[in-house]
Amino acid sequence: MPRQKRPPSPTYSRELLRRLAPVFTAPVHFCATPFARHTRRLELRGSVLLLFAPSTSSTSLADARLVRPLSASAPPAPHAATAVALPGVARRLWFSSRRARDAFLSAAARACAAAAPDRLRGLYTVERLLGRGASAAVYRVVRRRDGRRLALKAIPKAYAFASDAQLDNVVGERVALAEAARRDARFVVRLVDAFETPSHLCFVTELAERGDLGEYIRRKGGKLREEEAKTVFAELVLALEEAHEMGFLYRDMKPANVLVGADGHVKLGDLGLAKRVEKRVEEDQSGSESEEGRAWRLVGRSESFVGTRKFMAPEVVRAGRGRGYGASADVWALGVTLYLMVTGRYPVGGRVPKGDWRALAEAIREEEVAFPEGSVGELLEGMLDRDALDRWDLGEVKRSEWLGDVDWEAVGEGRGLEAEGEVTEVGETATEIEDAGTGLDNMSLLGFGYVA
Image 1 (cartoon, one colour):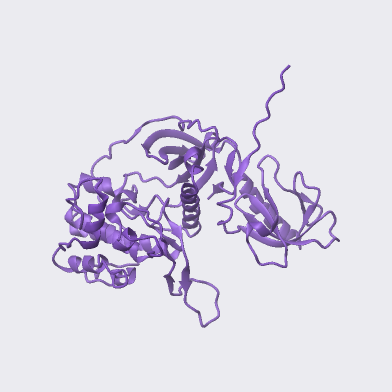
Image 2: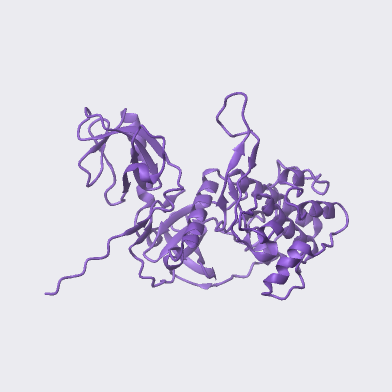
């Protein structure tokens, strides 16, 4: 009888694991008995357990003494009064108390649930293919336990693992979506679930029942009434403020990435180009370590040439070779979005032939902008200043005359965008995610699994 081939050993990427913050940390003894003194610092990142030497404050994976993915089929188990047994490992984890041990087991059980295999078939029913792009397909799914409709974004592993840049985008989106969920963001779409199938990396998020803002504007004849535009814009200002406060440059603000919920309120979606950068929090004289209520500023920069070209700021067009851009580039793109909402056209590049990037880049740098009259025009002049240092920041935008009657505490409450009759079903009926046939069943992104 011919010998059966063994399935290939899993190939793990640690790229996400490097960026995940620990969900649990504690000092432990890693030994066969509670009397030995092999002290370690335990971290649980996603569904992966790491042990570090206590003498180092490093969180680098290169300094980890143990990196072990947890398994739903063989989770950590309690042992003795304060210890935990790890399947396949002879030594035990001894905690300082039963309470600390039980807190770890609770966090580990949640992590194991996120790492469980075949979660798509076990938890969701696929209803409809909403759209397909070069990097992913988006489906409408129903969560079986409560009937809630959600959006599932399926990214083929063949795309995710094809290049460092593409993997970086997937990792960045996973981190940003989870951070929005952790902070219970009001105006940024939040992660509900994340898991792998043999051929895909899958995000489950809130569903935009009424499509995206670009579709809504088209249904309204190409532009919005000024008051309607103001309602949307105020929510987008707070959305961008939330993204920046989380420590991310959004880098792809445009109507197609603004999702309209059933209540008519909007949220930022598609965080695939979001990039975490340095955020500086002002010193607190009281000695408190909490960021709540303290002034902060996003000071990090990016040099990547990414985004949707007609929404790119002049400094993004010139990016690279040591010339970067920061949060003000998001303000420019938000200004282009507002200009589109109130005029129905782009501020620059509207007559440039499709695909002529050189001409569009020149228009972004040089073309004169025809601003609308009144206070909205004054606001747009501040947001579309080609000098990034002089461009208005979000605080100045909120204090503008045009937004003077906005109650910022009440934004997002009450009525949102008015319904335009029944929204036509988009996409096509689907009962399962299309098999990408990538042959990458052995590829896995350590720590990818997530349960809200």
